[in-house]
Image 1 (cartoon, rainbow, N blue to C red):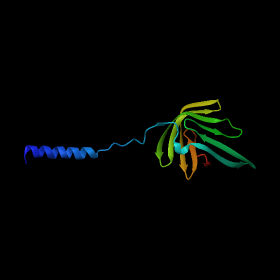
Image 2: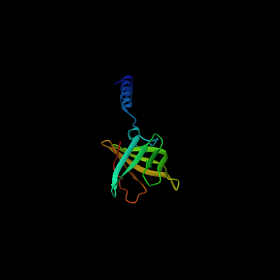
Image 3: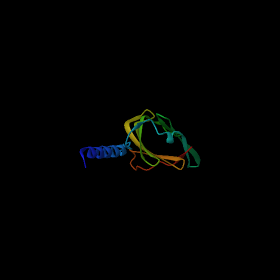
Image 4: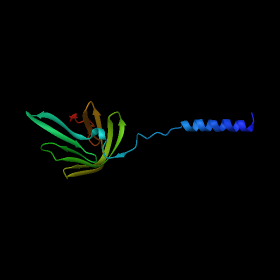
Length: 135
């Protein structure tokens, strides 16, 4: 095989192999705001000693709020999210509990499954999910 043939084969190999290398996006990337799949007004109702109690969970593009009768309003702001599985998101931001408690860099995990959403806070001692919310 001559010099020209070897150079042509080498060039063709580099061209073919180099063209098939692809780059992948990192799933661990933090995105600003909240995932579109979770946004909206969610609610959860339950009976407490004979009376119906409804908790409202509102997820906007840049903030989240939870309102419960008789409790201080909870809110999250300066949010970033990361998809960690099918319908599962990790969210971090600043947590406020009615002005009395502020935690920066708070984490929570949100799961959307079958048209319902549940979440758990990273600082809760049991790390259990706090019931299912529906639209």
